[in-house]
Image (cartoon, rainbow, N blue to C red; front, top):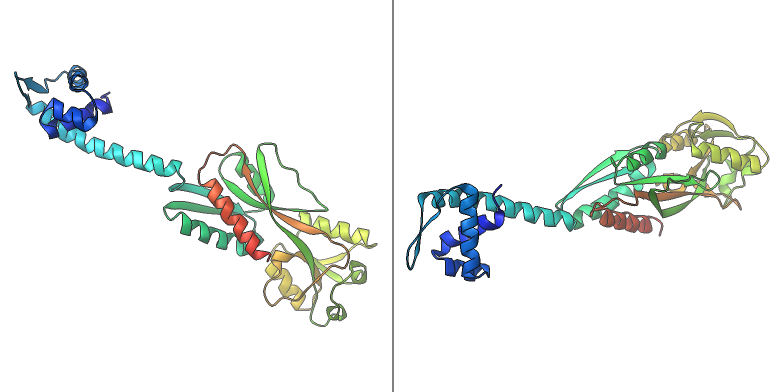
Length: 298
């Protein structure tokens, strides 16, 4: 394989027309330039220069090699610039995962900020529940993922992962239009013991959290409808079909929601990444997510 340093030296000698001039341009001695040209001749088996008493003259082989290698050197320079951009986090790909609620509220603003600050970087987005996203972090098919955990249903993370809290979102009660509790500033779960409930799917952390909260209030909720789509949950409540307990980020504009009185429990949104992940785009996307979360909770 040709030595790129020797190839660059050949290009400079051809451009300068002499060993001494090429040495000045390169910051070498004339002897070092001569040695590099000799090494290139040995490597190629070609005679590159006819050496006279006071001058050297390139052979046809040197001219052809210089032209071909000039193209290669241009590509190598472009590759070096791209590598520096990748190392600086100016280019490359960052792969983001999110659960649906954060995907509607936090992620769009965070990614918009990230793209604005890193215009040459690429972003991919994958949606899923925490149990789907965390294995992808561990297998390095995602760089960072937004997941949630409920205070009454805590989640533990493998030691290879780092979790940063973005948002602590209190739980809110959605009440149908005619419900008498809408007149109050907050609502006690015990006052909703006889209500029909709308919940997320039975195996979810949200549904388990609701069951535990209601058990602490002295009753088991009578759940008639289940959906993991909080938009659908809100519509079912608005239609008068029941009440629901949802995280604050799931409360859309125009939806009536009351805080729980005295319960104080919440869902936490976390940004999780593999601790050893070397992607230079990871820090700026983490910062963008943190800023979006801060703005959403003001």
